[in-house]
Length: 282
Image 1: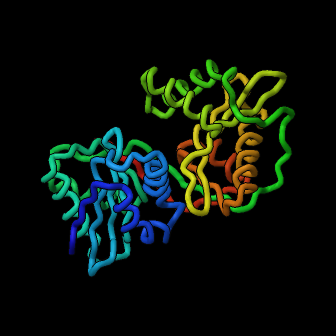
Image 2: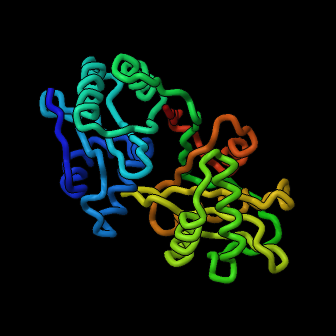
């Protein structure tokens, strides 16, 4: 069994892409971040890009870019996956790299955390339990009155406030500089969409991580005073239509399993559950 470390994201994705594309939606984080870094020519910005190969076939991949969040993907059915995880953890320890959190498919991450107890003083604990959803065909939705459009500069102040509120609501607060950078980037790239009612924006959703066959949605947020009127449903379903109309086969998103309202909204639109995703911290 071989542990292979990569420094250049172009070489890493060339080696592991076929393995990740076997489950494209499940592996959207690694794929999407790598594609974006290659597009932006950020070739050497990751602390961990590692594969563990069994008989020249990848059975475990590990990727860590920012905030010490390790994203893992693996073949949980492989008889040697335990050994692969042990080798990966030892390699991380030997390189003196701090891993603040781990995210990936529930069963794989749980196994990783259980094995990591043997080597780490502080065990991982659950931060968030999510469902990854995929939509290939939209259900018929009656939209509320209003206008679906791309966010623009005049929306900036409210968008920054919403990003701050959203990040705090999921226990991942952001610094003001991060909020400014995100809002300005999303509006400049024209990835952020809003629902406008009576000349006031009431809801937003952002297009993220385009893949080979699909694209993702995040930052789904409706101002508290406008909730319960279908604006998130209208905004998300309209963005799904936008994605599908550009030739993608599917849309995907994450939903906190502890939030029955958002899960019900996404299923109403036509999203189907793919896998459970576990996010652990230590």
